[in-house]
Image (tube, rainbow, N blue to C red; front, top):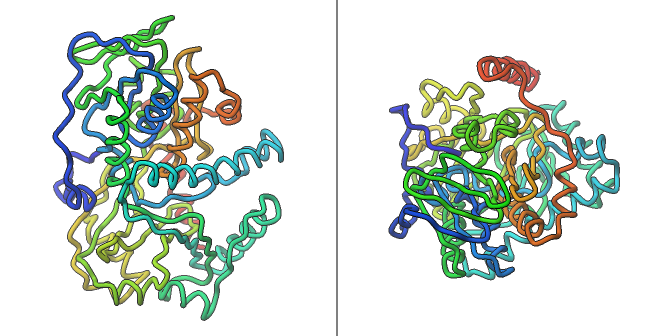
Length: 434
């Protein structure tokens, strides 16, 4: 997510920012620097790429336009989720069962990598395992059961089916008809995680430059990434800016600019509600997401605040009366919270691809990129970092499993693709209500 600047309703200080102490800013890039690899983007994907490259012996410079994890990596719902936002359908249809199983197994690896990095670098980020996917109608419950059965049949991934009393034992809400529970996915404090990755990267010797937006990328045997005050010369480049890439895409990566779309999503954070209330509403302290097209997603923080997200915008315009609309959505799920004080309201943009599958690949022999996480980036960004680092180190087979999946530009060009997406979203929202 990138920051939303123009709406006075939004408290631009997210709960995450309010609950951490950032270190002093890294200095901007000044003058000429020569390294092996330049990484553009200081979120999870860029940091994980840089960490793995340093472990392999490469000299790395990382350029961040703002502060480390000031975008989606530090502002998201904090849910790490096995699988892909698209489901496995795009891979099953394009590449068949064997490749689809490889991708599924790598999504499991993504969650394992997250835990591995947290342990290796001693990152205190409030990790909790446990994940509920909930359905709010009989039709959605039937679809959820079908999906759960297909995952177990085709990929060996079992979930626990919940309805009736078993459902209420996990989530005390009148809204939902059924759910699945699994213990691989879960939630964490994303900014604590990201700042921990940044500390580890700097300790490993990564040269981190903040407030260093890339204004141009010269291609060739040596890549030159330019900023307003300097230039990085490198053998390889990694573009890990995700949603920020469209802002400078014509100068940096025009080939992939139109293959992602920024989608606004918003989160409210209540006052601390106390452990008793938190455990009464979510006894297992799981992360929760529904299976609608426009999802609600929520969880409790370590200090027992309800962090409730959703209310997507495909127009990049912040919805009017956002705080009250989000409060009403939360109260529809948990009526007991209708009078809870909302202390934080924030939002930003996630990057979605046309098919909701991640878009990883290369622009040239020495320029790689990762984008299109489509709301599943907390874990998948770490996997992307590993695959990109492996490809630069000469082992591109696993990256190519993702790179071979076709990705298309959003229709309509620069002027019409946003209105087209708004109309499409309205259609799916109507379907969600049926």
